[in-house]
Image 1 (spheres, one colour):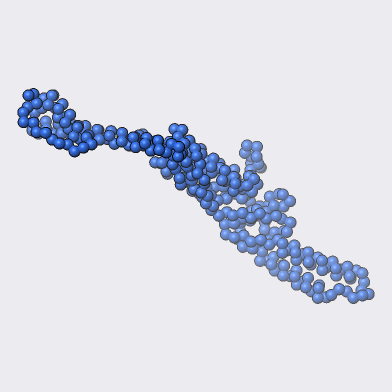
Image 2 (cartoon, rainbow, N blue to C red):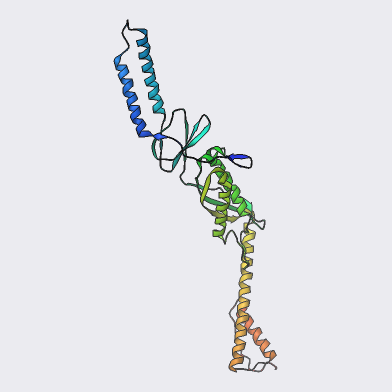
Length: 305
């Protein structure tokens, strides 16, 4: 049964039926000895029957053809390497066993690497979730998992990987804002690296599945606002940071004033009416929230004079 996706047949890798190359080396040596013996006999002398002459020529040509045929069928497989074998355009399996292997000379072998590949993408300009233009780049570690899909289901699997990396980077980058200075629990490109990298890896695996490619690792390596808005966004970040800092200072000051008033009242240090309480609150808030050092003023009279 042939699997299909979007009207396209899906290839599936299966083991190839190749032979041990070292055994075929022995066969090659025997064929070479046979050819050498035929040559050593020399061409039949004049007067020898025509059948003998034809037999000599046929044996010589046959031994040479056999020698070349056996010699052409050898190929080597290194660790983490594979060879896709086809016979007159028909897929006949993938050979992954290491060492010297042999197949019939009319079988075509296409070698490809099953090792891990590392790609650092170019910087891509995209719009984040808020519509701000940003520059983003990533590093991806990928490898061929299914050689049949890589060879037969896409035209050029390496070029396919490069294009899908850029497409996946654009998709993931547009899902989230570059940054969020609020205290809301949101995923941002700058502050949620683990989440973004995991989403990017999942997105690329989904896109490259059709080519038999698996992504082992993916992560952002460059993230910045586009040059045309970098200055404005820096000022915005600074303003957001100042507002957030002020907010924390005010909240902390209110809490400190509340504790101070409660402590004074509980310990009976001083009795404050509403007007004096308001004045103390005002003075404490000015001292705690001010940017400059406080300069205390001693009041020799009373609040009502």
